[in-house]
Length: 203
Image (cartoon, rainbow, N blue to C red; front, side, top):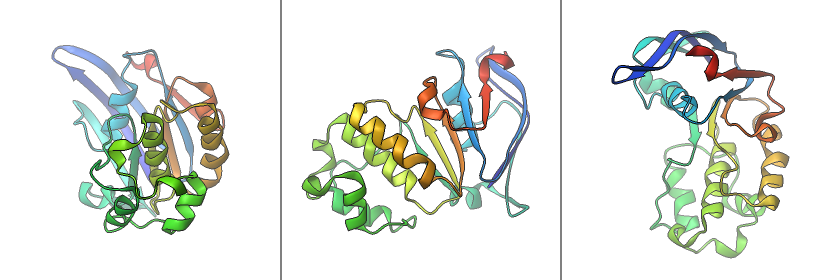
């Protein structure tokens, strides 16, 4: 998945959050979006995900040199962030099989339990998960979904030390053949990325 950004800008009311962003997120590249709190990191990520409309400019999605429309693009995307929701009335097992009806996972349910160490909670409703467990589950679904593009916003928020280590152990292997964009101010979350875009440079 390749994303071309041309003269991208976003404003709220009369205030420009950022302007004149021109860049290419190359296929299978690893990118970090950084910037001060309130600088527009998450806004940029949501624009790239097609969630938030842009004010000016253009975002073009290509898969194998073919330009994709919005409906087609969504099929190639997985997003995990503090604002993404899980169906909390489902148990972990129910959520896995429901999710699999919409996007294909690269691991079966037993493999997912082993990779996440969630074996003891497979029948627990998601609403009874801790905030850290929910975040780990979001990351797991992102890592192990067969999509070409992964967008992560503050990926280790709510994770304890052990699960931060889990993230660091899993992410590079799980995303080796995918385009990855991480929105973060924590260098350890993205220090393997080849490219860093600082939103503060586009004010």
